[in-house]
Image (tube, rainbow, N blue to C red; front, side, top):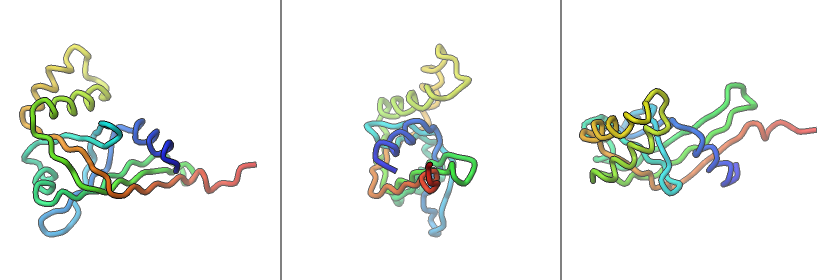
Length: 144
């Protein structure tokens, strides 16, 4: 995929498959809602979650965004890198607001209250990419 296609897919999706490294070296894989900040993947989670503990010990991770149902519709982006931890309240609130704004079912007038309540127990992360890999199976089909 081109850089523009990668940016478009990351900008249109809301969920990533996030892989961190458990203490025993096995992968810890979860689905997370995310947002983009300056083109970088950002997410928040509970401070005491397994992924937060894993990232405090080892900041390496992989993020996967995929789209498509049929083989020739499959496309995706995998971002590997390290995280920058965001603990200041303003930074955590910013990430939370951006994520919550994309969620359905949260009334606009309740959005700030929800984010402020949730942010008290959360920490944010911004992914600093070291490698980006992409694919688009639609490009495997010859066009006539």
